[in-house]
Structure formats: structure tokens, C-alpha cells
Image 1 (cartoon, helix red, strand yellow):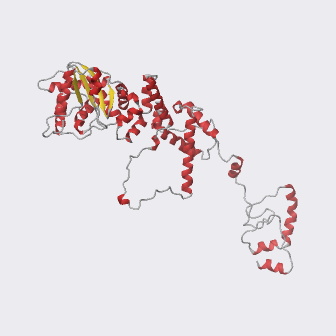
Image 2: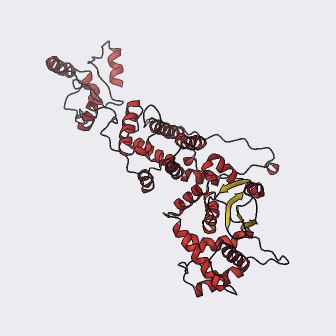
Image 3: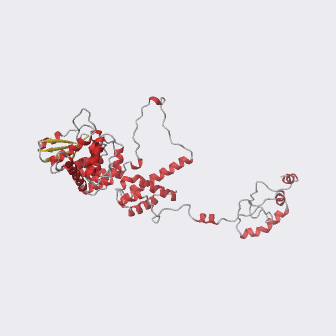
Length: 470
């Protein structure tokens, strides 16, 4: 720097070159070149080259500023990769050739079963994750339309009423990807979610504790549309039985989630949403779907075998030959396995038998209080079964049968379809039926009498479920 200062004092001017980018520090030989005639000579020699070759800037100095004798200041070679990036677009657009996601097996199963509404949230989540990871700049409507059109062509289950069958899917996917971007942006900026204000005296605050609901299964527009179709068709009597069963299967998973969040008045509330459940055959249909059983005939056969086996254990033996004999056998089972009654001599039964009631008065005889457990009300002339109704929670389900075995299956199906827990007073008989008719082990609390009865039953008969109970 002293050389530059001395030159200025002597009235000399520092010679400049075009577009010189000086380094932060220069050695003494470099400063000497700049202030000498050598610099000017180099500049004159390269002026002709500048006329034919475009001038090119480099990171530290121009190619015409310093000679090749300065070994540690060199011109950088162009990066071939950066050249390719400059020629190609900033990001790739999604089009009809873009491959679709590879879904989880859980989603694949629902796509094949045309039951996507039950897992719609998870389906959209997987799509959003796939496309955002590969195309983080996705934003054009044409891209979403390309995805939706191709997705609908391969998986018609995503179709929903609208401008296009895939429009609702595109909207859901767009919203999910925007939400992902928003979360990443907040995290990058160091923003945390808002926290609710704490009460001044938290010790005396009473909070409403609600069940945690999986937001991925929050009823979608498609789910609501199916319920509306079912309700309107049921009211107008314009919907086919096959379509009702199809809707029940498509909404099964969402319905189970809804039931988990509604512990109070499940029968009443669910029948308001699904009026078809007032007909026992649709309750049984859902029951069979949950159990993955094709036909209720298998359940009837198991129940008949159980009645026959228990009847032969009675003293004197009772043949499983008529409606009244079946009632007798059922009540014998209830009495044999019930919890100790103490001073009480009456065992509560899951059936209420009324005799010689006029048909127009039968419904008046069916009584149930709010939130009560389902029971089977049976009406007979003393010999034959005339009508059977399942009632509970101020709700009536018509079994539409005069066969006690079929009516009992509707009762069992009601507990499954409406996700109702067995009350303690009925838990032992329902546990026994669950074991030997449904084929699922009963894991609730068992009375000592229950265990003894099961051991006797298993040691004398082969009912097909010997290994279920210990």
C-alpha cells in the first residue's frame, strides 16, 4: 500500500484496466505490475483478442488483468454440471407420463374393494408425501389435473360427483400439499404452534376429556354423500338392497371411528345416521362383513349344535326340537354360568318372552330406557314364535323372522355392529355365544361357574372351538 501512496504523491495516476476485480489482498509483485509499463504492454497485446473474443469475467480478476506469470490466480474452468443445469428448466412439471405412487398394502386392499372412503385421509396422505418429495414445486392446476386424471383411470374408486370425477381428489391433494409446505416453512422460520392460555388456577379447572379421534378418518364429503344417498333412498323407498349393503361396506371403517367417539346412545344415534339398521337383515349383513363370513347359515348351524349339546346335559335331557325347548335350553345356560347372585334367585335373561299379545299391541309391550343394552323381545302364542324384536336405547330393530336362532343372531349382531359392550348381568351368556357361535374367544371376566360349564361342555362334545377356552 506504500507504493500506491507514493505514486499519488508524485502526481502519477494509477493505470486502470477494464472490469478489474481486485483481490482482498495483493502481494508486492502484483502491485508492481499494476503500476508499471508491463501492465500497459499486456493490455495492448490483448486488445486485439478482445475484439474477436467476447470478454469474460472470472471470479477473481478479468482474463486481461494479470498475466499467466501470476501462478496462484487462475481462471476457473466452467463446471459441466452447472452448464447442464443452466440449459435445463428449474424443475420438472408433472404430466400424464409421471408415474403414480406405490401405495401401502392397506390402501391397495381398499382400492381393490372399492372402499376408499374408509381410508380417504390416509390415501391422500400417501399421495401428498409421494408427490411433494419428488416435485416440491408442484403448484399448477394442470399438474393436479394430470395426477387426478391418471389416478381415476387406474383407480375409479377415487371418483366423486363434481365437475370431473377426480376433482374432489385433486382438491384434497392440493390442500394436503399446501399444509405440508406450511409446516415446513414454519419449522424453517423457527415458529411454534400457538399455545392456549393456561387458567390462573389450574388445580380447580374442570376440563372435558374427549376421546382422541383419528383426523385422517374425519367424515369426508364422499362419506357424507353416501349417507345422504342412503337416507334419501331409504325414505323414498327407491334404493336397492344391494346398493344399501354396498354403502354399508364402503362406510364401515368410518362408522367404526364414529362409534369410538360416541359412547353415549350409540343405537339411537347410529340408526338416525343409518336408518336401514332398523331392519335386522342389514345389522346382520354388517356383522358378517366384520367377521368376514359369507353366510349367516354357518352361524345358525353352530347355534343349533350348541343348543343340542347343552340340551343333552340337562336333567332330564331336553331335545332341541321346538321354539319352547330352545327357550328352555337358553335359560338353562344363563342360569348355569351366571355370576353368583347372592340372595337373589332370579337370573336376568337376554330374552323377554311375552305370550298371547295382540299383534297391534306388541310394539307397546317393548320398553327400553335411554342408553340401555339391547335385549330380544319375543312374542308367541305359547307354542310358536310370532314376532321377535331387538330393543335398547329407546330403539327397535325388526328381526323379520319367526325363527329363534335367527332372532338370536340379530341380537348378537347388534352388539357387534353398534359396538356395544356386554353389561355384566349378560356378559356370561354373550361370552358363551361369542365363543361357540361367533368363533371368537371371550376375554372378559368369567365366573367360576362359567369355566366349570365350559370344561364340561368341551369334555363331552366337539363343537369346533375346543381350543378357544381353557
